Length: 281
View 1 (cartoon, rainbow, N blue to C red):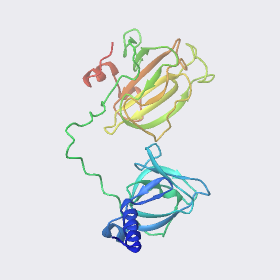
View 2 (tube, helix red, strand yellow; view 1 turned 135 degrees about the horizontal axis):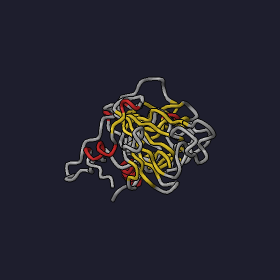
View 3 (tube, rainbow, N blue to C red; view 1 turned 60 degrees about the vertical axis):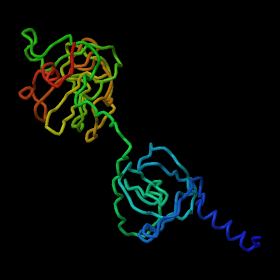
View 4 (cartoon, rainbow, N blue to C red; view 1 turned 180 degrees about the vertical axis):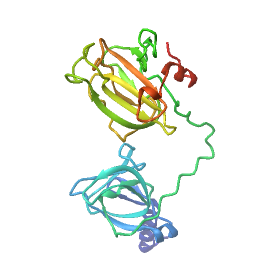
C-alpha cells in the first residue's frame, strides 16, 4: 500500500508532466538543450494582458495571454509585425519554450542577441500545396471602352475601364508603391473633374521587380496605399472615380516599361495583359 509521502511524489510528478498554465496558455517543459540556450525575460505591458500568438504577427490566432510581470523563457526570435510597445519598438517576436510567440516590444530581457528561429519543416503528410497567387490580374472587373493611342486619341497612353464610382481598384501585380499623388491643373482631386481640367486626378504608380510600372488614374479619393508599401496582385489600392481630366467614372490604366512613367515608355496595356494571360473584354 503506497505511503502518504509516495502519493505526494506521484502527484507532483503528474503535474510536472502536464506543464504549468500561465496566464491562460499551457507552457511545455523545455528540453535540456533548449533550456540551456534560452534567455529569460519578464513581461512588461504597463498592467495590460500580453497576447500570445500562434505566429509572429498581430493578426495570427491568439493561443493564450500573459500577465504583467510573468517570467518567460525565450528560445529564439524572428521578424514579424512591427509593434511599438512599452519596452521598445521592434519587428522582432520572441518564440517561447512552448512554441507560442510574443512581441519583443513588451519583454524586458538582457541586451544580448538571440538566435534566429529556424524555418518550420514541411509536414511529410502534406500532399497538396496552396496554389500560387496570380502574377497579373485585371485591376477592375469591367470592359474596356477606350483603347491605347487610337486615331481619335493619339495621346491616350492607357486604356479606360468603365465602372461605377466606388468600384474597388486592385493592384494588377505585386510590387512596391512608388507614387501616390493628386495631379490636376485646377481645383482639387476630391471633386469630379472635366474636360477643362488636365491631369490624372488621384493616381497610384506601382513598380514590380522587373521594373514594369502600372499606373491607376481618376480615383475618387486619396488612395488607400502609400509610397514604399509592398502590395500583392489583387490588393486594394483605391476606388473608381472621375477626378482630373475625366467626364465620368472609370479607371484609366497604364503600363510602362520603366520608372518614372512617361509617354515615351508607355506600352499598350490591353496587349500587355493579353500576353500575361489576363482577359480584357
